[in-house]
Image (cartoon, rainbow, N blue to C red; front, top):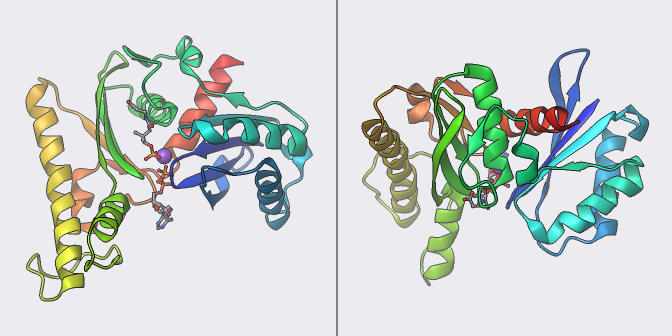
Length: 256
Ligand SMILES: Nc1ncnc2c1ncn2[C@@H]1O[C@H](COP(=O)(O)OP(=O)(O)O)[C@@H](O)[C@H]1O
Ligand SMILES: CC(C)(COP(=O)(O)O)[C@@H](O)C(=O)NCCC(=O)O
Ligand SMILES: [K+]
């Protein structure tokens, strides 16, 4: 089994690729904390294996994308201690053999590169990846595999949290699309502002990106919050929550 580890700002996702069934199963997540200790990571990792009846020896190789550098060393050590092998950590040096290229490899998040690689592997043509994570990102890839650029906005939960932490009277609300865009109480007002607001943000960004470029693009959505904006589904050619896991696997294999 191949193990992809996607360390994001909210969650560390462990995705196991079952080669026989050709599917990602199980996909498990733990909350990201910046000060995660080696022992904590190792223990949580071992719990994932125990609860899914997977033995460390079932894992042929491990690829990691992390956009949380604070935890990299402990994550590396935890994999080594529990799985008795070294994980392949994606860095900008891993992009050499890939069909996807980027002009500022050192700056771009490895999760965005993984998304781009997986989307390009799937379509092999112009595409935009929209990732609904802690950040809401748009990554534009053209038919030659070049990453034309990235757009970064606050993610949905991040926007909700910012209202809650920056005001005295606004509560933290659930991410639910209300019936009306005109709020009748505080909770409804925030839900309307965030969920209808972000619907417009995503539509507007796709429209603006398309205006800047001559060709049309396929749109792939991913990330933990990709299915919250139900009124946006028509904008996406594909929703694939395992896109980053797939890209991590492709990059790791191309480098081996
Ligand atoms: N299956 C899910 N259902 C609902 N919320 C989810 C799911 N998976 C992740 N989330 C939430 O979506 C948010 C973004 O998650 P994720 O895409 O993993 O972000 P990141 O890559 O930044 O860590 C997080 O707040 C997470 O708790
Ligand atoms: C944009 C991101 C914060 C997205 O992270 P996520 O929402 O997946 O946790 C991450 O890819 C990152 O830290 N990127 C570095 C800056 C860049 O990509 O240009
Ligand atoms: K992510």
